[in-house]
Length: 611
Image (cartoon, rainbow, N blue to C red):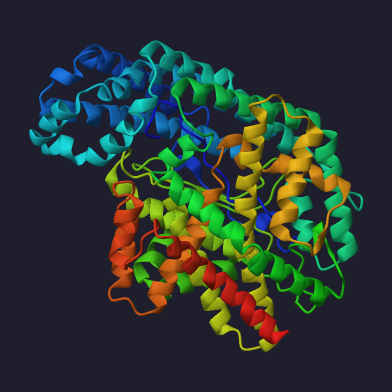
């Protein structure tokens, strides 16, 4: 993060669907978190907290009120010390968050995470002055300090991004109050949301399923089973909709208060600034995708309805396998080898890095009770390594999820040498490597398939994944935009939230769908709305960006692989215009988005020809 708001949690991949169980949890790898700490009772946790507390007190005493007068070399040293304290605290919070994600129903893990959040917040309050004071240094004075020190100049990208928030910075007293309030405010509501969702069970055919397990049934070939699972999810969410609505209303209002006090013009403005992307670029993306609904999702789902032999699809048919699809299952070893082969075919270095995740137990794969229902790659801190969480059920979509999260993981490993302050990328660019990894894996799987019917099924599956990543996430963005706008006029009822949800789903998915009443509650399990407002457009941004990149790659762009890996190594040091320039791409050009969307449209064209 580049401003004074608390760090955000690792956010799962869009929790759209999964697949039916094909493997036993005991056959799948569990991660080894000992590279961070041996357990919640590890004495190293208390030792690191004590170290950070002592360093933070000394840091405040040494530098508070003095930054503008420091020579450049001393200011560079101060940033290094700030980075070291932040990394130690980041290690603690990474471990606490990963332990909680293992089993959100475990009270001990939940209490440990809350305790660590409170103690880390107290310690980080001691260093809060640092970024606030850095932003008060006069531009000319800071430039003079940078010319005096190579160490300080190294942090120029971080200072650039930090100072982008200068117009929205409050007084030190208010910033401290907001910082300390976080643990009893937004963080507490987030915890309530996660624990509630993790503890819910959805009865399907005599079995009480977790949310992940119930959503996985929506990929089953049995239409009646899909219906029963879908209605169970809708009822379960509906039974808790008042709690979810209160949680969401409170967090939206909390954000509005913060935005107003800081002076952000639009609810999305903070996210765009944090993503280092201009408002007009995001608006152009959303407009391009929205205008493409008819030729993308509407056209594809009309084809799918014809495949199913119905006039209209039910909402539980959205991700259903095609009638001719074989119920292909993948073992964990097959999934691993598929992804590593695809990565190695593009660049051996990528496969070598990805292999570490398997060999060194950096992946937690089994779907277990209480576990986070989505998937994510958590970078932790540069002195350690990333970890991947997913729920592997053995279908092609799970192979794609593995490819996606390994893309994140490879990116995080390559960027780690930039250090704790410079390794992170904005959300829009963070999705680049993950979606590119998916595309490499899909292309490799498609090329290896010789059966025409199976190729058609694979192509349809890829179209659905891309629709979920581009169309569906932009629809989510539209939902958030409408909710935040209406919340400014007062609290939204559960019924109104459901109405907005159905409006955007109808517009984005098209006339091929029928939605039953319980579907109005489905907005309530999208964790992105709660954890990271306006995150979701980053998926569409990343997908369209990758489609354009892949088009350049297919065109035989010289030195593409080396330039691509350099882009990942840059971490957060470069912005999107600088990163894309070597490939001849510019995200501010409206044609850029249409170029990315044309790949998806081309896949639909191909399916229409084969029908």
